[in-house]
Image (cartoon, rainbow, N blue to C red):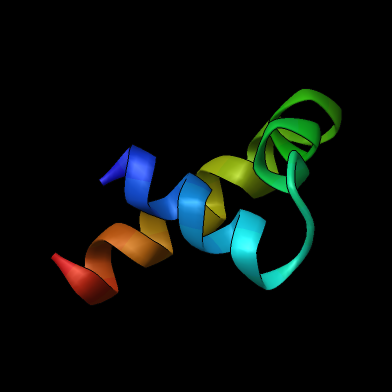
Amino acid sequence: MLELFIELTNQIFWDGYAQQLANENPAVFNSELNDFINNYN
């Protein structure tokens, strides 16, 4: 699911968005990842 989340967010925003978010604001990254997993698992 992590790979799908990264691919999706990179497509929606820009290439590298997921990594940038994870580096700059890991709490938001984890929150968005958890929401993604809960909604699409």
